[in-house]
Length: 326
Image 1: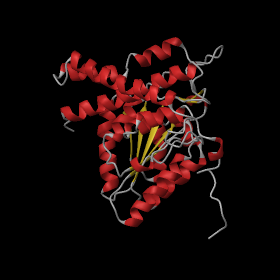
Image 2 (image 1 turned 180 degrees about the vertical axis):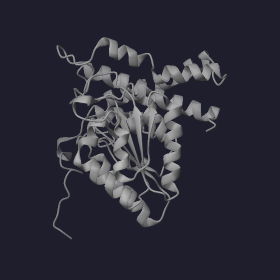
Image 3 (image 1 turned 45 degrees about the vertical axis):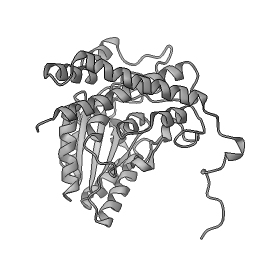
Image 4 (image 1 turned 180 degrees about the horizontal axis):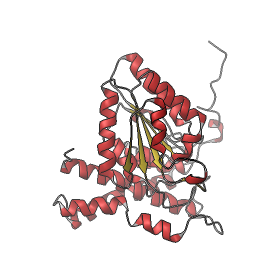
């Protein structure tokens, strides 16, 4: 597939927006300026960017507890995101959803989810609705390797394949389910092998290569849009920080050598090197893009800090549907 300079620049911007937003969120969390826990997407940027760059605005995505990167890649408002993470009334969910339930239905981001594997049936439901309506909209679901051990994933995959729904399953295999290495919970080496059990085409890609993810996603999305049913993409990737937060004092489950090996393959560094070598962008132009995005992230942090918390009398607003059955 021929990749245009515009696509390369788009992938670069999407990844940088995720990285800089997440790094800022991590610092706020470390400084106790953010309630609850956050599950940072740093290191996995190429997956969300590569997939979302192939989607239209009306295409839907289902997410995970590590969902900030997906919303950013789909075009989410950084200020509303930061405010939501900080529990402020100006956030996407008015400060009541927080990190693991952030969503933007106007962008067709169907929500992050605190339940492992729960995004799959939600996205498949959207795909079913798309087919029922007779449109060519595609639903994509992101999930981790651990989610493929969950019944909800298998039910969703079976339904999507049996009904030839316009869905794309994207496994972000970062080799750890919370703190447990993948090889201790699976008898297979490659998660994509599970796709064959549903008669679903599957492909394995380097999840640290945004272009490789983009190419695989473009084919899967085109197939779904044309009415040929779902596909499965396994992206081998890695999260740089711990399962939640930035670090856990006194608790270490990965070696420094392992982490450094993955960082040597950093997706943003690799794409920037490719863009410079190909004459797409100079170092100064790449730095200018970073500075512009950093400024927008700084604005988002300031917006979140300056925003008010929800008023007590709004505690139940948008949480329960009041009134009798209709």
